[in-house]
Structures are given as structure tokens and as C-alpha cells.
Length: 384
Image 1: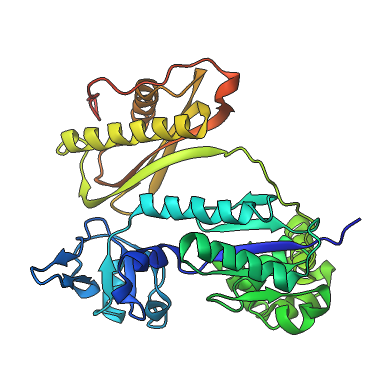
Image 2: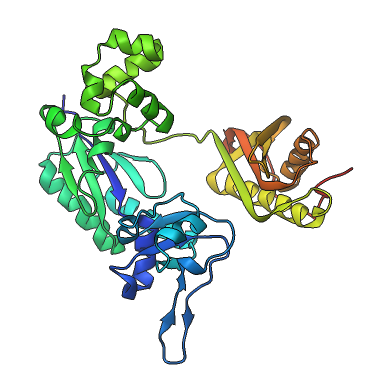
């Protein structure tokens, strides 16, 4: 039986790196991608491009990604743009181009699959790869994968190769950017245990804070705690999991085929909208979200049995509602009608800052008979 060898490949600052392919003059600078109404660069008559600056952004919006130079200034993905502008006011601000990101995502995954086809897709910019059956040294194989990605995209990636997914996910982040980190079980004590406990995928901010209160700061600290203590503090299931991951134990396989649990679309508004005063605008947004969910379902080859909505009010309180349909659908009109029924079951007295539509209970299209269509006309957002 071959020795288990799993790789985690993570593209380096993926969205920002794709943008730098289009704007190579920005290499080495602090660049941020994000915002809802970020303007495109303006080309002057002499051919010079004028880029938006982070300090000039006004309105809601978060950072989609940032270059490593921007990260050095404390600007990371998920941060609000207005807050980030105080840290890096002169950073270049570019709008996101998701069509380009999806294109380069397909390119790098195809390049990897030509060498190592057993791939688990973990998102637009990262994958797990099972290398166990490939008779090639990890160093040369890792370099060959990195070169194939670069040849196909002009972009760099970082790869971790270890005995399992847990360790490879950590390892791919150790030598970014453009890194290749190869670890064995013998390296856990020296390379993994000194790292902060939050480096373990699955230990989120709340869990990390709780561990800190117990005096557990590193993965090594966690490994030193008796399993009986962990189960007493965290419960049987979580305690056992924490004990195993601290020892570098992970038996999860690389899953080459998977069914998504849900497909959703949501929109955060530039200003808070009211169900009655802004009915027309909300109706247009609501309908558009339903159409996009229907298109996503058809493109990915699924029909949905359950349609749900999500609202976040001006005070950041969120509510969700869903409804199960008598038959699966990919029809945008049916999705809009079902989402509208959900909407009737939530209070609409407060202003709304976010609206989302979700399709779950997914079934492969080959198992159902359905006719995908577009919404004909618009339905009112709120029928009072």
C-alpha cells in the first residue's frame, strides 16, 4: 500500500495577482481589490493610467483581497474599506473582476489535473491533491506542479505536502508566497507545535480565545493537555478532535466528487433600504438575486427543493426563513415566488442592509425533470 501523501495548493494573493497580470506596473505596490462601486482605472491621453486610492473610497464595502505589500500595512481580506483607508490611504484600489478569477481558477486546476488528477476542489483558489499513487519524489513533484501552474497562468502558488490534509493546509501557509513545504510526521514537533493554535483549520476566533483563557497558545500547548481535560472543557466530540489535530492526526480522504449543500446569492446595500419607501429598488434586487440563483443552479447541474431568504437589518440582526417546495425546481419564477412567501414571514418595519436568496435540498438535474426559465416581469418586493 503506498504511503499517504497529500498536497494542499493555495494560489498566492489570487485575486490581486490576477489583477497584476493586467496592471504589471503595480507590482511591488500596496494594492487592494474590493468595494461595491470602485471605479476602473482611467487612461489618460498620454496612455498613463490613473488608479483609485483607498483613501478616496466612500461607502460600505469590504476588501476582497490585498497584495502582500498591503498586508504588511495591516490590510487584509474581509476588512472594511473605510477602516483600511486609515491604515493604508495611498494603497491602489481596484474593482473585483470575478469572471477573470474564475477563468484563471479553471486554468490552474486543469494544469494540476494533467499531472495529478485526484483533486478535491476547495474553492476558487485552493485545492487538495492526493499524490499517494505518483512515483516521484515530493520535492521534484511539488516543483513540477508549481511550474505547471505558472506556465498556465503566469501566477505563483504555495504548496504543502504532508501525510494528511490537516498538516498540508498548515504547511502551504508556512513559506508564502511561492513556497513549497514538505513535512513528515517527524517534523510535527519542530514545525507545527510552535505555531499558534488558531493555525489549525477549524479553530476559529472564539475557540482560539477560549483556548487562550486556558493558557493554551500554541499547537504544542494543546498537544500537551491530557485528552481527559480537553473533553471536560470542550465536550467529548470537540475535545477528542482537538487532541487528534494537535498530534497531527487527520484521516479525512481527498474527496474528488462532492455535492454542494446549497447555492446562494446576497447583496449588501450602499444605504439601508426600507421595504415600503424603497420597494421598487428592493424588488429589482430581489428578482435579480433569484435569477442569479436559478442560473447558478442550471450551470452547476442541480435543482432545488428548498428556497430560503436572509435579511440583515440596520442593527446587524439577521433573520432567515425557508420553504420546502412540492417538487424540485431550477425555474427563476418559482424561486422568486417561493422567496416571496418566505419574505411574508419576516418583520419588515426596520430598514434592511443585506438581502440574500438561498437554494438548498439540491438534487442533480439528471434525477429530475424541470424547465429552467427566466422571470417574466417583476413581482413586488412587499405586498402590504
